[in-house]
Length: 269
Ligand code: ADP
Ligand code: MG
Image (cartoon, rainbow, N blue to C red; front, top):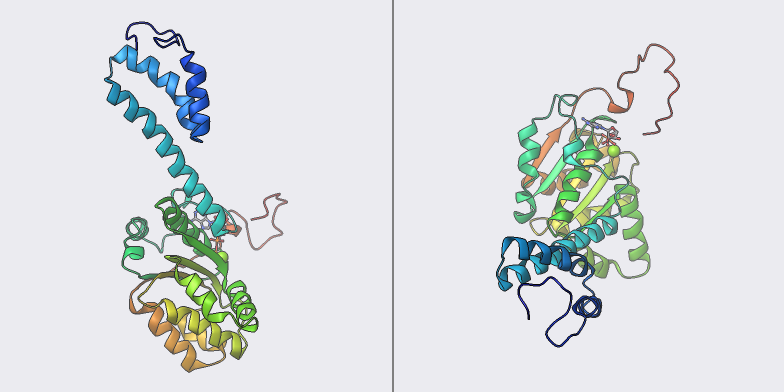
């Protein structure tokens, strides 16, 4: 290989640009293809060694694949909306310490198979924070599944009716993080409550759950139709958990004078 010229031919006279194009396509490495010639310019200008150039090229492709993997996991998790911890306004949510979320954002709780519970009235940021943490988890390489409690129960009932409950519970057990949003909005029938209990207790000390609820624990008996089932579930959920109680007015209503007719607005969040 010639070292001084920047012409795209090798010693044999082959067109190296089209050869790189062909080879990176065969390798399914589009980011490498895009980066190769740009990095080659830099390598010449900055006199990189061959190894440094190769490492820089491969690094681009690996970074692109990592980002793509995270994107795939975020899509697969089925979040209702994309919300990040960075977008959360802690000045609005005064009942929550920034450091608490920063610590959870390190995802130590997933490694420790611990849970996170967000409690509080509507609009206080429960779903936002649960999603933000779960997106972090996706970015860190963890598989995540998100659904409301009602959706989880419907899935478990389907699996149960198809005689595949234990298969489904095993399959879900492979997710290091599951988000159960909106426990408490809809009370459960006894069978649903029982399935949900199996779901939660099966993950106890094995894999993490993030739960959000508009009801304090004292009212979960109403949700599950049975104080004993509720108590047993809460016991397992909170044994290794960060329980975060949010307070305050709904973020959805911010800036509105609730005593008057709200001004016309197009926002539908
Ligand atoms: P909850 O699940 O507690 O009912 P959400 O998390 O869905 O509330 O919040 C309602 C809306 O307000 C969402 O669009 C969310 O992104 C936004 N929101 C709530 N709290 C905050 C906050 N402190 N900073 C930024 N956005 C917020
Ligand atoms: Mg919510």
